[in-house]
Image (tube, rainbow, N blue to C red):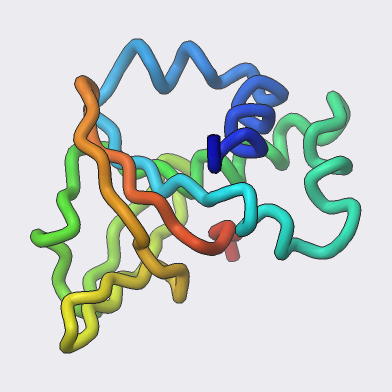
Length: 125
């Protein structure tokens, strides 16, 4: 229920089947609140058919090829994304994990990988 915007974005990008059928993947899944924090009109613009490529790039930036559990992340580690860029991980002294400054607030093992719920939308550079 906290990921309706992400699901709508995946549908607009025609990526629902891609992420459910193959893998293994690690997905950083922004909450609805994370999408709401973007500038007004951003999500509405991205889900338009003419912006599908840009939306796909943003969604692919949230995907790592392979399974990465939170406890295996190393401070300062850079990992390549499906989009072609990379994310940087920060592991704080209390064990909190940040990915490009977005806090991992929960993790779920899935049949085809791992989902880490994050509190910000990750944007490619």
